[in-house]
Image (cartoon, rainbow, N blue to C red):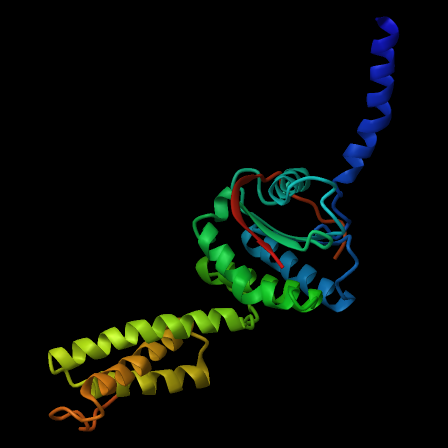
Amino acid sequence: MNRIKLLILAFLFIILPFKVQAMVSPTNDFYVNDYANILSDKTEKYMLEKSVKLHDVDGTQIVVVTVKNLEGDSLEEYATKLFRNFGIGDKEKNNGLLLLLALEERKFRVEVGYGLEGILPDGKTGRFQDEYIIPYLKEDKWDEGVKNGYDAFYAEIVKENNLDLDYSKPTYISSDSELGMEIIYSLFVGLFLGFIFRTFKINSMKYFIPWLLLFIISELFFENQTIHFALLINIFGFAGMLFSNGGGSSSGGWSSGGGGGGFSGGGGSSGGGGSSRSF
C-alpha cells in the first residue's frame, strides 16, 4: 500500500508542474501578451501605451492575451483562471477587462471584472464582438480584429467614465447575414406599417422624408446602426403603402414634407461576466 501511495505521489509530482505551466503567465508588458505570435509590434505598442494611460488616469486595466490553444480547458474556465492569475484590475474595484483569443479553437472571450459590469454588461460585450472583432477574425485578420475590438472597449470605458483621454473610433462591420436579416425583418415590419398607413389614411410621406434626411446625414457623419435600421423599416413601409394602394396615391400622399515594461495586475478578479464567440 505504501508503494502505491509513493507511486501516486511521484506521478502527481511529475504531472502537476506541466498542468501549472499550461496556464500562461503575464509578460513584463502585462497589458499585451501575444503567446500565439499573431500581433504586429505596432499593434502591441499601440495597445500597451493606451492601457498604461488608462490605468494611470482611472485605475482600469485592459489586458489582451492570445494563446495557441486552451490546453483542454473550456474558453470560459481558461479566461476565469487567467483573469485571476494575472490579477487584472484593482483588488477593491475589480475594474479589469480581459480580451482573450484562442487560435486553434478559433474562439474569442471578453471577461469583465465586477466593477465594469455596469458599463459593459454581457449583451454589450457580445454585440461589440459581433460588430468590431469577429468579422475580422473570420478572415484571419488577427491584428485588425484585436486592435479594432480593443478600440471599441477602450472608447466605451473612456466615454462611460467621462475620462479626459483621446480614443480612436472603432470600425463597424456588418456581416452579410446580419444585413440580410435586417432587410427581411424590415420588409415584414414595413409592409405592416404600409397596411396601417393605408387603413387609417395616414400620410406616410411626412414620416418617410424626415427619416430619409436623417439617414443621409447619419451616413455622412455618424455610424448609428439604429438610424440605418429605422430607415430600412421606413423604406419598406413606404413600399408597403404603395402596394396596399395598388399603385395609386391617397389624398395628400405626394405632398412635400420637412426634415513600457514591468507592469502588473492589482489583484482584481472576474465574476464570470462577459461573452464568448467562435469564428
